[in-house]
Image 1: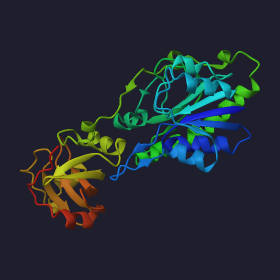
Image 2 (image 1 turned 120 degrees about the vertical axis):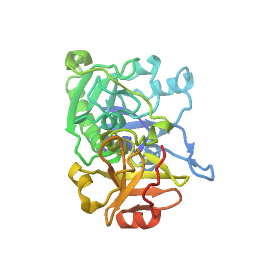
Image 3 (image 1 turned 180 degrees about the vertical axis):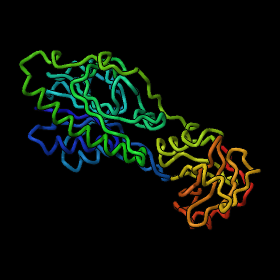
Image 4 (image 1 turned 90 degrees about the vertical axis):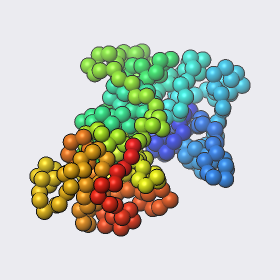
Length: 328
């Protein structure tokens, strides 16, 4: 099959790689334009563009796709069979969706119709879902509303965070794309709609995964510790607080058990239970912070201008004083 691949971040590269190594032909790659990412304002290519350049695959990076007649005519001239789309970064307009012979197919990182939208992996972790997954859907004009050709799910493990879960779903997307393309190729002379499943019939609630905002990264110590833990995992490694006027990214925590909190040997100051207050230090483990209910232990963190530190190194770096407060 002749394929045009649409993708931008590192998350998309596994799918492009597996397609490029297959018997199918990736005839072009579409990615977002280079962006200024460093302090020197140097233009940096997307991971997908960098991979495609390395593999000598033609790359297009249009700033605008809707109404861009030159770009649309270029796509038509390539006579492709499929558009394969994963985390491209823009919704494809109707005039583009109709170009490939056998349709446009997107890998969405959720169990649709739950978590349609821009940040499905983050919200599955923020909301404490037990499972996530990938659906290969036929693209249409709506936001992640297309009928599903294939899907698979994975369990979200206790120690999963945004990076680890993204890697798992990226690899799952690549595997499912290969299975989906094989199914499309085998049945290309049939009505492919007969192999599709309406999202509404999958028996799951419709939820939308809105884009993550800057304020979402701030930890509210007045929340319960489970919500705080989910934020740290779901926005890893960028969930943060303020300590002595400096940004402190919280990388890893542990929720303190009730028996640990009441253990007299730990010598916590129970008079300082206002949320976000340092109530003690556990040597060789971390700093104990009060929350809405059970305290948490900050095990690993990154202070502004410093490298990540953990346990005793973190304690020595911050020199925490019982009664000091982390601010949200």
